[in-house]
Length: 216
Image: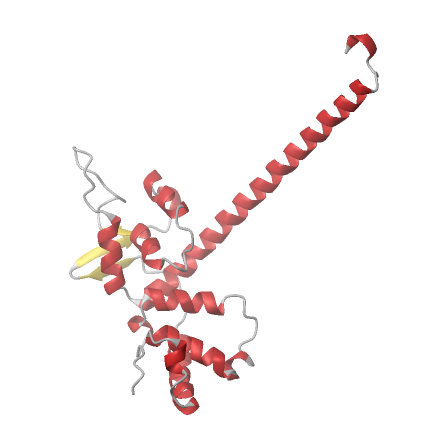
């Protein structure tokens, strides 16, 4: 039996890399984890497409060999800003790094994504649009000229892994800051509501105690 895995970062699919990012996120030290066979099985499963149960049928030496190969290609990648342009089948798709330039439809669809790790192709289909066009651009009859579902299918079949890692890191930074800002706003709103409720309660207590007498 053979285990087939990517030979380079660009050979890795966005789906594989998103799972790797999710798995490795928050791990402070890989030193001890890298030696654990169950972790190695998880990584090989992600990049081979085989189930963990199937990977466990191979010898430990085979699993370790494939795992080390994957670690080498992942560690060779140097994080940088996304190029912002990918060419697939002769067509160029452009990523605008200024999120303030995105139209309302793109912002709404980004917010509707429940998990960016589970649906990286949806993220890419919103961030990258055909050169010279806007997201879900319409004609005079309100027909969408470049539906995102077409790009999503195309990106699933072919999207350079290195560009994905760079743009995903760029996007996650924005995504995290937006979520943190939303959370902070919700907390501030909750505090204001709690203060108002407390003040109203004080007024009711004073009224029940007859503080204001007949005026109340």
